[in-house]
Image (tube, rainbow, N blue to C red; front, top):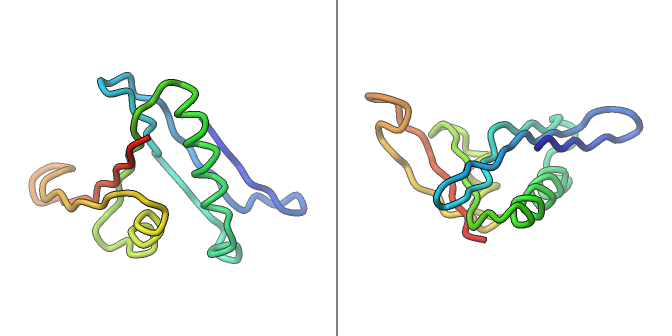
Length: 105
C-alpha cells in the first residue's frame, strides 16, 4: 500500500506499507517521509490514519513499524499517536538495536 500527500502539486509526504499474513495479520509500515517544511502539520497523522483504515479493512489486528534508536522524532510521533514503543537490542543482528512500534487494532 502506498500513500502520498501533495500540496500545490508538491509531494509533501509518503507512506509505504504492506500487509504481512501473520498470524496475526499485521499492517507493517515500511517507510515514511515528510518534507521538512510540512512536519508537525498533520501530514504524518493523515498518512497513518489512512493506512490504519486500509489495514483494518484487510483484516489486520495490529500495526507494526521500526526505527533506529536515535530517531527521536519518529519515537515521539509513534508514542503520541498511541503506539507501544519497545527497544530490542539485537533486532537487526548482533549489536544492531532497533525501536519496535506496535499498535493493536
